[in-house]
Image (cartoon, rainbow, N blue to C red; front, side, top):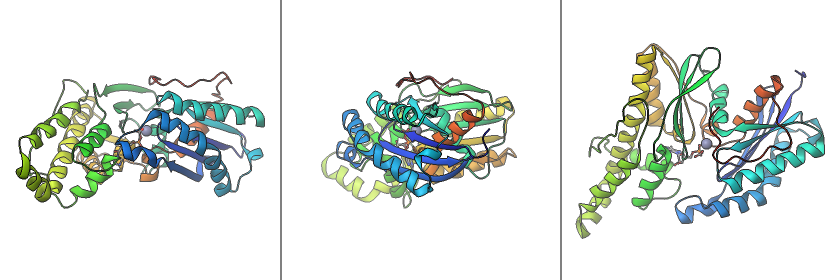
Length: 338
Ligand code: KG4
Ligand code: ZN
């Protein structure tokens, strides 16, 4: 490997336009421009997202280069998310990365967004110790990966319907809170009682998840109060309802992980993706690993939410293995985990 390997990472799979410069595995800059236009709609509007990426990609990449004190000509390769994600959003990042790589005469490296989230663990302290289970938990994904000692991976379980972050976002919308819902619910929960109302915990056989039931359950619970009674409930007990919902989601995320750890005789866990920004979830996972004599690795919050440093770090790893992509690389919205 060249002594100075400098990777530009680009991430545009959903509603964050992000670019990062990583030199020899060290993050020099990490720029994320979160598109605020979606907040009005309580969810990501694909057409608006791709237009915003188009507008933001050049300034965001330029800012990443400037912050790192790196010029374009010093780049060794460009790593870019090519799936899974929104087609129109991915296309902006992939087209931009290929064009710049072509102009500079350097390779492009296509990165699976989920590989990027797992790679964010390389930026965590402590680092994960393989073998471990990695929970990828975001607005689009809820998956358990078994990462073996030889770095090979196996998908153990995934959500059959909504992702955990999606449940936070949908419940926030029902409660009239802002988007994204996860941080809002976490903030309000701080003063709430997690035992105020017990929402049923969906637990499927094996290691799969389902989060559509809890959202409906919360809606039915609210609808069982009418008119003034409902207003009174929300006025007095919004923090309690948020905390009870959050506790239920955390229990549901923890249960399959705990049984998988015990069935496979593992102790270590990694927690990545936007929802892993949640402090109560982090605390629970630290506890789950500690009880078993293991360690829980969680990246710093700036690397848990969608970001390009995780894409650049994953690209740095592939660069060292000469795993480059052809310039025919295309966006694959439903890219499976390989
Ligand atoms: O990884 P990410 O930035 O984008 C996707 O790939 O989806 O994750 C965004 C998701 C959103 O659903 C958001 O509500 C959730 O992560 N989230 C949280 C928290 N911060 C972000 N959920 C719970 N607690 C948080 N503190
Ligand atoms: Zn993500």
